[in-house]
Amino acid sequence: MDDFKTQRPMNLRKRGIYLLPNLFTTGALFAGFYAIVQAMNAQFEHAAIAIFIAMVLDGLDGRVARLTHTQSEFGAEYDSLSDMVSFGVAPSLVMYEWALKGLGKWGWFAAFIYCTATALRLARFNTNIDVVDKRYFQGLPSPAAAALVAGFVWVMWDYGMTGEEVRGYAAVLTVLAGLSMVSNLPFYSFKDFNARKSVPFVVVFLIPLFFIVIWSDPSRVLFALFVAYALSGIVMWLLRLRQKRQ
Image (cartoon, rainbow, N blue to C red; front, side):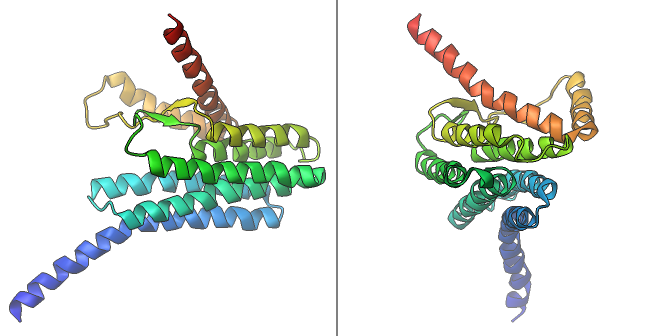
């Protein structure tokens, strides 16, 4: 009986740790759901911000799982389903409600292209996770594509522009973001970055400066960063093509 009492807290703690990364995944799922609800209520700025919050939480769940050694097949599947809602369904519906609705069938068709591309991107990632170079993503990651869509809505909202004024640009951006996800363009994954290694002192100074710049104008800075990241895939593809020709 004494042995049972001493072992029981350890088992409970182990089960509790496995719940920790899934709580972050649930938070990302809630943020995506919240973005959809806010879009239905015409609160598009809140919807866009919620998608960015989902990105932060989605990035934390995997790192928490690795730090606590609580990776599981259930967590991977749950994370993929959460990504589909937060970075597939939510951005497409936010963009549709904000700008694409006025285009009729072409509007929901553009939104559907993005949503389908997200599902295909996630399915390909899950099946190729053990065979591709982990330093690079094959196709634009779904969180980055969602950041392009949500960032565009957020920036235009800050400028006081309505979706009707930029619906053409919104449709093109939505379709291009979707096609980028199912393309073969290489995008740097940052997975080989090791924060445990020593870094120059200037890096320690630049990190808080980076967050200060984002805080000064979050919508424009974040949108610019993800536009640059999306263009980096094209640049990297051109460099690889040039190397092959040489």
